[in-house]
Image 1 (cartoon, helix red, strand yellow):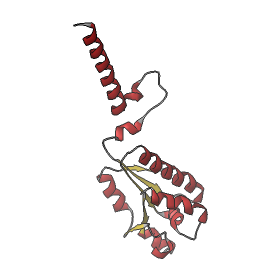
Image 2: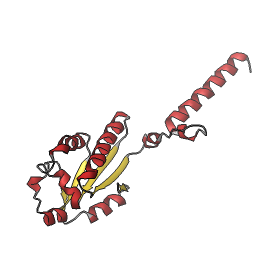
Image 3: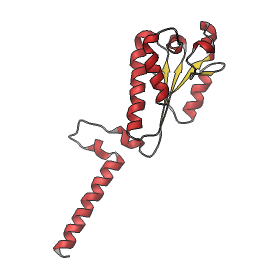
Image 4: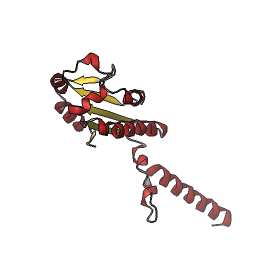
Length: 162
């Protein structure tokens, strides 16, 4: 093999290795690296998450802003995703339009990022919350949220409990 062919061969191998590492998410296997790149795993498959919001107002900010940021980052990185927030118990009040206006912009951002919000019909009934009190884009699971969560898990969604 002459020198020119050897150089082309080596260059091609280096390019193939670089392509393989960037497209297969192998950046995270470097022994000396502190960084993990999990988004590469989802380049060819959708990310499916369902997160419960059952806590009171002290936890809403963290849960809602982190999901809004996640939607933005996933969109920016061209990752297909489906994120659903299921709200019941005290968490349901986060999506009542007049309850706490402090989070209204964050909740609207969730909608813009195509993050679905589903309220528990049973919790609504017990709390005296009517559909008209919720943001218009919030869906309602009847009679309750339990079967909805089970259905989504069966469809491959990861269930997160913050």
